[in-house]
Length: 165
Length: 132
Image (cartoon, rainbow over all chains, first blue to last red; front, side):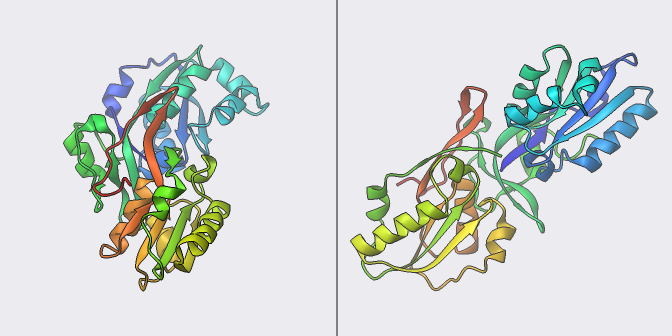
C-alpha cells in the first residue's frame, strides 16, 4: 500500500479557493483511506467545515482506487457525475501523488488541488493502522520492519498526518 | 495501491533452497499478480519446480488479497515450523512476514522497483537482505 501524508493544513487549503467556486471533493478509498487522510467520513467532515466557512461544496466523490485512469475518466462520462464535473471549478483531491497527477490530467478545466503526497510503501493492520516500512529513496529514511507510524513519518519528513479537519 | 514490481528469476530463487527444507510460500494477489510476479498460479508453478528440481517440502501455500495488510496474514494463521518462507509479494509484504517471524529466513521472490508516478518512477529503499 502507498503511504500518503498530508501536504497542507486546512487554512492553507482555503488560500486556494474562493466562495464563488463550485467545489468538488475527491478521495481515493484505498491507500489514502488506510493512511487516515481520505475516505467518506473525512470527506464529509471537510465538506461540513468548508460549508460552515461559506464555501460552495457541490459534490463529494469517492473513487475505489484513485490511481486507475479508467475509473477517473468514468466520472467524466457517467450520467450520474458527468454534469457535476463539467460545472465544477475546483477539485480538491485526497489521493497519492500518482492519483493526484492522473486526476489533474483528466480534469483539465478545473483547478485541481493536491492534499496528499506519497512517501513510500506501508503495511496496514487494524490494531496499529498504517505504518511506513519502505520509504521512497528521496525521503532519506531507512526501511523499517517495525515501521514508522504516520505521525512519526510526518514529523521526520516535515509533513502532516491524519485528516485535514 | 499499485507499486511497481518484477519477478526475481526462478534460478535465483531456486539457489536459495536446499533439499529437504520445509518451506512456506506466500503470494500477494494484487500488485504482484497484476504484474506477473505473483498469484496462486505462479505460486503453484514455482512450488512444483522447487519440489521437482530441489526436493524441498512445501508445507504451506498462502494467497493474500493484499500482502501489505498484516491482518490478512494473521488471519491465514501461518505456521512457524518451517525452515524458510518464500514471499511473492512486494517488499512491504516481505516486512509483514519478517516482522511476524523474525527468526525464519524470508526469501523475496519479487523485486520492488518503486511507486509509479505517471510515466516516471519514485524509487524505494531496499531493506537489508531482501535483494537476491
